[in-house]
Length: 150
Image (cartoon, rainbow, N blue to C red; front, side):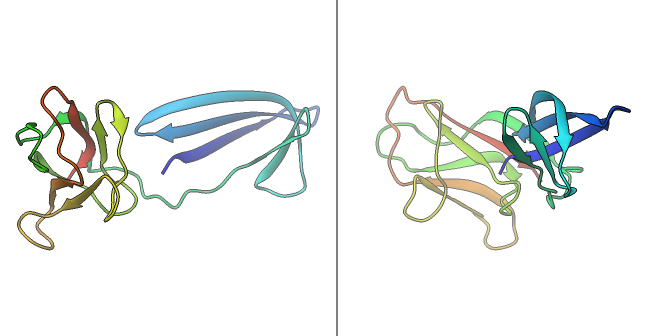
């Protein structure tokens, strides 16, 4: 889930500069909005022309202690019949810092009935390291995983 942060710098004239940052997979996308007027509530600012930006306070704990891994290859044959792949390292799968599986560069949906399911090969509590796909990638297809290493 993307995390949104805002920094508000109040000028003496009563206008503010708002810097919005969206964090997606540890990449920060920054947008600067200037000459905005502060609305009465703490979490809203009105931006010219007639646009309201709502800033949400994230309750996502920082990723301190977790190492991000990007474009990690999975172990398993890409042969048109295999659907089970493993990662070299255990990864987070807690609803906040979930893995992202990419198939030929396209992000896949996780969950029963979707593109794949993440599981723990050693049983509950042993750490997520297995991807079971709902289809079998064919030779020449590209498959990789972005995740936080436990």
